[in-house]
Length: 112
Image (cartoon, rainbow, N blue to C red; front, side):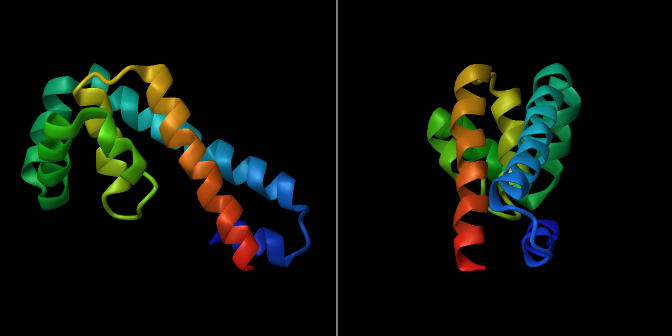
């Protein structure tokens, strides 16, 4: 993981945290807009994969309550696509999912 490597090579914590979080937040924003703008294609693609179909079902059932799980490995990215497909409000999406991404790196830094 690049974040851990940056810390291991004496990059200041907040610099590594800023760059890792910025890149991760940019990725989740791109996923959201893919889901939003390419609704039909994204929905069809999600329905074809196991993790995607489960994510879509959870998104339709629970709405904003899926966002705390977007930081998880495997299901996190499909959930960010689902957020766009089900048209969650973008500002709340970025606040919730983005802050969780920052916290994930912060806690990871505390371990290393």
